[in-house]
Length: 305
Image (cartoon, rainbow, N blue to C red):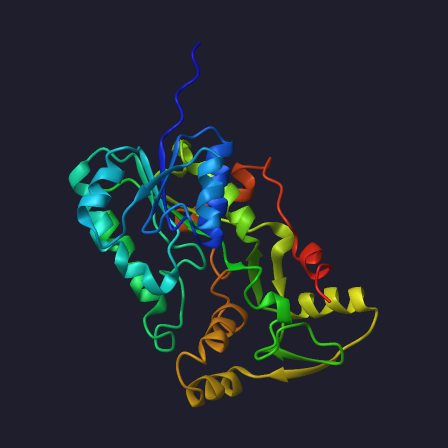
C-alpha cells in the first residue's frame, strides 16, 4: 500500500527561534516545507534553511498577494510570530478562509491557553489578543490545532523565577505564594517537535494540544529543591504573598511588570494546571507522542551556573 503523502507546510516566522526549529523538524519529518520571509537568503539562518531543503518565499503578513501565493502552495500553515504581533495574523486568517484549501492552521499561541488565564485585569491584553485570534479562526470555520506548552524554559527558569536576576541565586530565593502551585516548562525545540507531530494527526484536529511532561510540572518549592540539589546547598527562602505580588505589579510600570504578571499567573493562580486536559476538550501531547524525547527541568537546571 502506498504511503500517504505528507502535507505541504508553510512556516511563518521561520527566522525566529521557535520558527527555525519548526522548519527544521518539518523538513526532517518529510514534509515539503516553505518559509515566508521579508528578507533575502543573505541572512545566515535563512541560507541554512534553504540549504536544508526549505523553499523560501518572499512576503510578509501585511502583503496580501504574497500571502495568497504562499498559502496556495501548501496544505498546512504554522505561525510562529512573536506574541506582541499576534493580531498581525488577521489578514492571514482572511487569506486562509478565501483559499478554502488549508487542512490545518496552527496559529501563534503556544504558552498558556489564553482562554484559561485569570489575569485579564493585569496583562494589558496579552492573552485576550490571542483569544481574539482563536475566535476569528473558529468563526471562519478554519481547521486548527492550538499548541499550549506552558512556559518556554528560557523564560523565568534561568533565574529560578527570581525577577531581575539572569542566573539562579546561590544564597537566598524568593518564593511566590505558598510555593506549591505548579507550572509547566517546555524547551522551545521540544515544543517544535511535538507541534510537527500534529500536522497529519486527526486526533489533534480542531483540538488544543497541551504539553505537560510529568517531570516538567514544577512548583517553586520543587524548583528550589532541584537547585539546592545541584549546588549542594540550602537556600534561605523568603515568601511573597499574593497581595504583596499584586501590589508590586501595580506599582511597576508596564511593560516592566510583565515578568511578575506571568509569575502571578502561573505560580499564584495556577493558570497552567488548575484544569484537567480531557474535561476541557484538549489532548495530552506527551501521551499522544511518547516517542518524542524532551529535556526535563532537572536537565535544564544542570546546564545553568
